[in-house]
Length: 180
Image 1: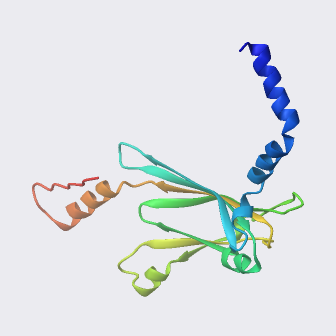
Image 2: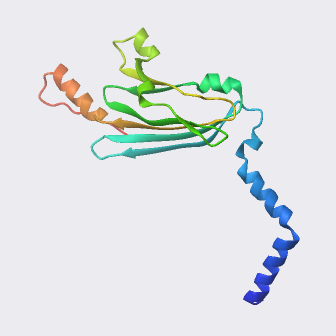
Image 3: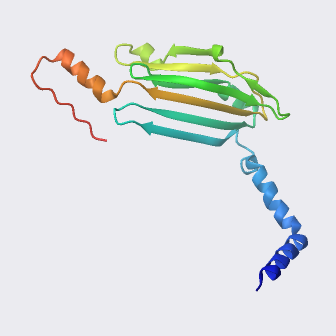
């Protein structure tokens, strides 16, 4: 077949069967249609992890959640993100709500609270676990919740362990081994 014959056949199919083409496009445009009874649906949950040679690195998480019920607004109204404060930091770049009419409500960074985790309140000597809590502004049913979080490892765990051992043990040779 020549190129003009293939082109004519393609145009004929598009004209003869437009409903099949449109139904596929509409099914892709409404991702929540497959989960109508769920309280919320993750549309995007992307995690990017980066390791450096010196033991430092970062982890980025981007989330996009479609809220489909009032129960989900109660569950997602307070986001909790934990981190180990001695060797990593947590930065919340944004938390925002997209309304069905297109407006965007941004939760300001001043609304982020840093608190001790449940574990550190029960056994503070054994953990450095902290949490950042974000009270999401104006979240309702039918909204889309979006966030971007970055954990940064600023002190490599192996180096920190070696320093702690050197402080506690007065020996001529200390060897730390880590297998990954």
